[in-house]
Length: 511
Ligand SMILES: Cc1cc2nc3c(=O)[nH]c(=O)nc-3n(C[C@H](O)[C@H](O)[C@H](O)COP(=O)(O)OP(=O)(O)OC[C@H]3O[C@@H](n4cnc5c(N)ncnc54)[C@H](O)[C@@H]3O)c2cc1C
Ligand SMILES: NC(=O)c1ccc[n+]([C@@H]2O[C@H](COP(=O)([O-])OP(=O)(O)OC[C@H]3O[C@@H](n4cnc5c(N)ncnc54)[C@H](O)[C@@H]3O)[C@@H](O)[C@H]2O)c1
Image (cartoon, helix red, strand yellow):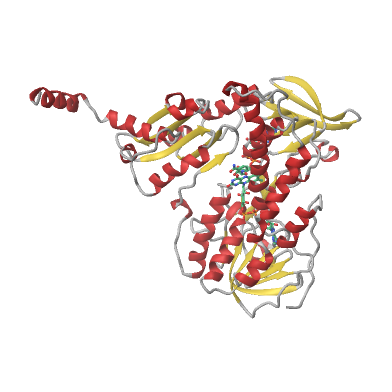
């Protein structure tokens, strides 16, 4: 090993946990290896997509280089799934304490949140699992050449990183996305947080505005509210989580209002101003002008793909700055030697989607595979309380695409375990192809909906109909029984008057 030294990366606060994190994911003393004469694959970006491509391809014997400019692990580990779910875990305890008296448990002084300790736990957990994505593990155990620095195409077969040239047979762009910066006058000057900075906080913002009620905004708004902030959630549409089933989103919305989150829907933010009293947001809501003053603003209004600086024009990789790199169904870009995976090119911006796309890319780049993105069944879950999980077709898509469906809905108020747990709010809704038991999609609203949607995904992927689910024994009492009950509901539709009549005659005859 020789060659160029890498830039230093810091993650505030640089306590023992963040030092450990950085030592694994962007070690200050790392020296990039001497490049091989040629690589089967050069991967730009070491988030979930890039890591899986690199590890999988190297495991199969390919010569692979992986380039990362910031922290290995990408958004998911550092500023996405992992820290957000750690925050949510602490906040759920507060949610339980708020509801404790309903269960006959008195928590006399309510919940006292030590915000600094919550954030320290987050940093400890994140650092604790970060060795799996470490530079050392990839270089020394998995046999991937790791280069820290910004990757940039220099020709149809070369990429430059930190002053070195890497030659490739095939390349993969896995550079992910970042928080979209909305064009709101004064926002930049007033200062705001995004997912890249919010997890660095050590003090709780007392008055917090969250702009954008998609998954990021909703998960963070509820977590901060429970951890003690006064939260205002501003959203431009009439309902939060508006890409989800409307009935499902309504349940979460009601929970937010109950917990004291101030919702300002159908709002248009006009400008932001920093004053001595705080950050003032001027907005219009249902035709009326209004303003509110907060200490901090979180912006969660969507994602922008990281297409800049890659010199994509030089290699004929087409893209746009909203949706990212253009790919065909095999995840091949407009340059046949260059593929892409993950948030840089996909509509479904999830770690598990990036992971499975990456597996496809390994086959398609190294073995002339023809794996198709459209063949994947991708579930997802928003980790509010209750959670909303979805797979396949939803109500709206069924209508838009003119697909005839039969829908089976089991409210948790009919499921013993949910009643016992005090979690009756929510439902399992399953759409099947009209007149059959073929599952086309499902939405679950429940405290652990994300864990439960896997069963329906398994059924869809393996062509197991709702009728078969009905004949699968589920332990009693569990909330997953709701899925079996949907199967029972389907089976009851098969008891047509003709079949019922036959049964009646048989039973009368055998009496
Ligand atoms: C707050 C938040 C919560 C989330 N929660 C969940 C969740 O619960 N579940 C879920 O499934 N998904 C969640 N996501 C989404 C998930 O994090 C992403 O879908 C996932 O990280 C995408 O992986 P990726 O590899 O495509 O990109 P990224 O994780 O963004 O990784 C891309 C990497 O490329 C690097 N890079 C960029 N440009 C260059 C360059 N020129 N040279 C070298 N390196 C470069 C970046 O530094 C980065 O490390 C969440 C996202 C956020 C923001
Ligand atoms: N649990 C999970 O799996 C999870 C969690 C967080 C994020 N993610 C991923 O990250 C992606 C990005 O999340 P996101 O929430 O930032 O984006 P998003 O695009 O899903 O939602 C942003 C919302 O903000 C609204 N908005 C935009 N501009 C606005 C403005 N000026 N004022 C008010 N509202 C405005 C939009 O209408 C939209 O509904 C998600 O789509 C998801 O793929 C996943």
